[in-house]
Length: 532
Image 1 (tube, helix red, strand yellow):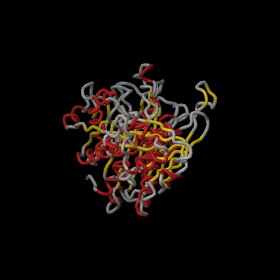
Image 2 (spheres, helix red, strand yellow):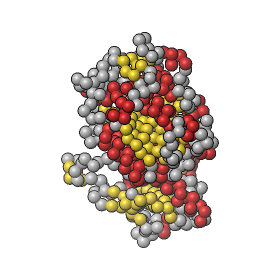
Image 3 (cartoon, one colour):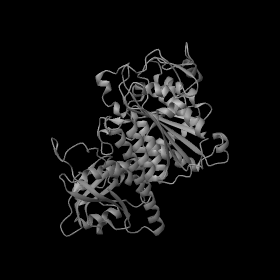
Image 4 (spheres, one colour):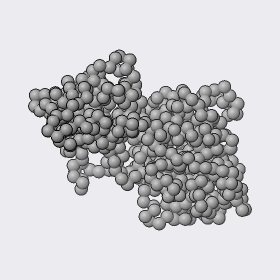
């Protein structure tokens, strides 16, 4: 779907559907029994062009502007060149501007309501009220594209569920016809940012939604190569031979039960010229760098610690952290971020077989630390251990942020409303939390104390893989911290937010692509005010 910004009067714009996002305070008290309501100036002109139909809906109490409220009115013939007008509620003014969340949701709602019921196509226009544009264009573009997302490539056109829903060919964001040239340029740039972010999040959704027989580790690497070609990023993919040469025994242990070989995917934006100098020496004096590390377990059966059948459903989403890293790297490259960004994904399958790793095995990580295996279903932290060590020693970044569907304990603690954030640098963790608030991807900070790290010391090896039921999310993070060294690092446990059973206008059933927009926002804010 195309997103366009135009400096037009909505009353003069011809389209099938026109959406009007309206704050609640602008409609409160307007309707008085037996009297026509007084409308704000920008809405009054549209009402006159529609033959007074907007005022009629308000007077009848059919629309009050509450968050999520939607009302359809049909203009009088011969008036505004629009078939339908959608009144979309933004809620109270003090909430409508919080990170653009209300505008994002309103645009998604408009897209869902405007989509044709059959196989047809339609066009949508969204009018930004005075005072909203041009800043409104980014969240409106994001919401339109996120709301239009469907993962239906495995449904036939006339399948058991009937004909597919139609599609919108374009969404136009209308500024009212009074925007000056600088404001129009700003609005178009904002819409472009929103389009890149939403398309990158939809890419992460696609990758996570793919069935595991279609997207084993090698296919995930191929998808990353496609993104690298699109954006001009540098990419390298390390196979089993290279992983063995690097001593990545933890990651290889997880992968050894599967017939699909593992790989480590490394994407680089603004990659410096290749150098034979040690990483830390080569990095000196260069631009700031951040490394994103994603858990890419393309399917998690639990290994020999086999999951029960109900818990194995949706384990294709166990690579959502890796999908988010690939999506975020695409967004950073297309937005031409000035930072040196590295995205690393450890892509494996965790399967039971005669070659699978076992409980009570001792595996040696790439860092040299020996690990006691206590649960083969706690595989993600082993993958991250080797990937984070590789990131730290190969690239010497200024900071590392990892994203992983790591623990069920995180879902118990925070439900499906937030991801957990913890790490060894408070400033970096707080910057992640702020980025989440700005984008509507919420993170909740958890402590990570030295006592947690000591708790993960092994009895017969350096570290034990799991720390028991108590503080399960934190002890998992404490395990990973031993591989981050003194590099500022933040761990994001996205287990509760990576996929959803509940459909909303902004988010259909399945993968969410959580983390793409907040990580991109973290880097954008970093450019203005480094958190380190």
